[in-house]
Length: 454
Ligand code: GLN
Image 1 (cartoon, rainbow, N blue to C red):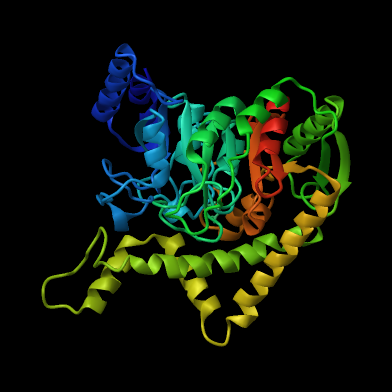
Image 2 (cartoon, rainbow, N blue to C red; image 1 turned 90 degrees about the horizontal axis):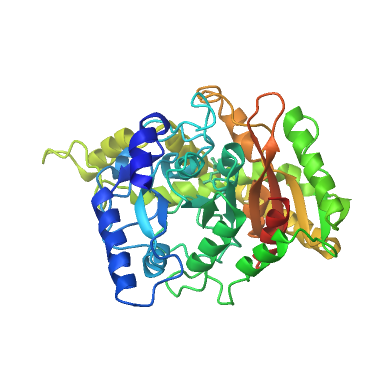
């Protein structure tokens, strides 16, 4: 049924870069056969899933949205792919994304943009717009995203779906093509909170192949989602972040957000306002730290090891071939960030830029720590606006970067955060997201709140 749906609507949405119908049907038949034989099945046996194309799969190409990896087939599965397969999940295909997960609209994909199923002339968010659009257009019931500054949560918000960025280290990054390694985190995307929780439990947990993986029990997110669905939040302390919202936020986003905060109060939560004074510097710190890590991570695409090789006619030097390949293979945003990062890390500037940004990062972590002394979760809108028209911000990187004002602090501090649908804006009838932030390894709290407002 999902393959039929993809055939019917993906020509207009373009959520997928690659669909492997034969493999999906074979995997489904295998589940049926094992069920018929009375074999023990995994917790998500037979459930189809759309996988962001930044996660390596040994049986499908992996492009990270970039020409430089076009046609590349990884030699191994990411840990989360292995866990999905063990759970019986059927991977339908790979979804579109901004190149190397840099962007907020999926317009930086080398393979053309994805369209928002709510209005095909609008962006589906980014960088994981393909996964979110696949969910919103019923082309998959589950999806995987990755979130470095908001790439799970912002697409969820603008497509009316659920997206969770687990605690940094909660889900293995082994086999996730790195954007900014100290910020990247894979997580579950779904149309309901319960579904996201079931997927979370399958992909989370310690992995010896990822040196930043946390060796602690997976938070009981499915239990918390069930508890939240009963609609009782008594005893929960909720902090509304004073710095996120207000001026510059779309009226319809503000209206739905404040109604949802009122609802939390009616469900028994104690709601207070909390100040996180350094959150306002999050965007500036992020756009030094992220490009610095990107400039280093993308150095591996050197025309020798993976994917594309341009101009190698047997007479040109390795350096020439590398230049030609990187010049052709990377898009404008990847180049912009490589240049920014190389500059920020260069001798004499390191302390002035990267070092300062890391200090701001510490201040933001301290804001979270102080806030979580007073409250159990923090809330804000997920994004300042609903989905904007395709093309509107492509030539204005700063306007594009502002999408992530609310989501970036959680990547800098590494704590759990999620976006849940909270209604439609009056002006344009488009979805609005509620952003919920919880302490490190207290991921279950975001599920409790999300399930309560669902
Ligand atoms: N939109 C942000 C950026 O462009 C976030 C990206 C992400 O989370 N991968 O960097």
